[in-house]
Image: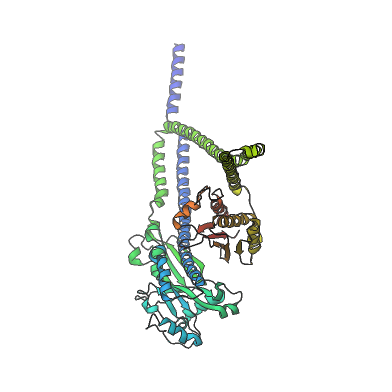
Length: 589
């Protein structure tokens, strides 16, 4: 009886233990409570992350909008400076027919959207007025200046294309109105591009805010070094009129952004997103999440960008993420009591799988890094080590020539010359490939460099200083010396190799921009056709057969890589009838 009682007691104890283990324990409640706390914490963190993400997204859209405006303005500045170059090439003077041809070649509607036209304004002194009017009325009998004013000089709009839509502006004298006159004098005195304060264009029937964009040109085609000299040598300005609403609507696409933009100049509203046009895609938010004011220096003026988030920014589905995290977390917490063990096992399996995937991704990342390094090493080693067998081949050919001499048939001599030529070309190719692989290996600091001296040294190094001339401005620029030397050496070498005459002229010009150096290298050679520009910038590409031109086809590709490695840009100017023009932008470092 006692043994039976003991067995029942043990069984009861075991059953009790199973019941207790099967019942909800304080540990389970603690886990559920902690889970709720974690859910609330995740909701709070997600809310903060969404807030930070929205802040970053807003900042990106602010920078993108301002960048689009600055980029478009730089595009128009380049067009105006192109007009200056055209006038300089014609001796600062042109006629109506020539300007029409030049303006039509720009294809304004496609290449320069939102521009109202491009024209020329000459600076006319009272003593020059009679001769000026007589000259212009030869082709345009009704040409006259308007309106009258009391200034001692005249700045009439002489030419503007397209003339039909800008008919009211032809002959308009910029000296009649303060905003136009002040900006044109500032352009004259500084020698740089300038825009006016807000004005209303005479050709704008809606009378909305606009501005004029000026770039000056001087006698002799070169900007004088002093203000007095600039005032004395000024010939005129190229200019473009802009209606601000047309410019901004063409620049800032409403469907691609969630912010609303207003632009002011000295408290004068230049542009604001139109309510009727913008409400469909990006309605105004009466209480915007983000607002930012940014002042941008814009060619002598300060534009204030007032940017605020629109209603579409607030209604972005990603903003609901914290709420969904909270709701989902609470649902999971309610299910946790019944699925505790199962979820624990699933979580462990998921974590193990995640660890495996993380390890696999880490291995793959290391493999890719090693592969890239090996490819770079291969290019370096291949171009370096292949020189030895080429030198051996060249030496063997020399021995054959020495040993056999005149015994060789003419055909064999031709074959030997061909092999020697191929060896020389391969050596050149390997040298350029070696230089190309070294571009990203070293960092160079900026230092003062004389552009004229470096250019002349490069020309002398090529041994062509008697046949070719190279002119460059006598300026000191702060720039990495060795990369710039390689760039100029390749560009000047290309000019000499590809020139179709025994003698040539290389012209290097320089402008210091707000953010970097602008260097132009021009020549009077045969040039590069526009349709071949892309090919010319590729590795191992030459525009003529390699048997005719000595080179590896890597010159321009190397120049482009060096400039872009220093975060600059390199391009070939299009639309040239003769000669190549390489344009380099090298940012300040």
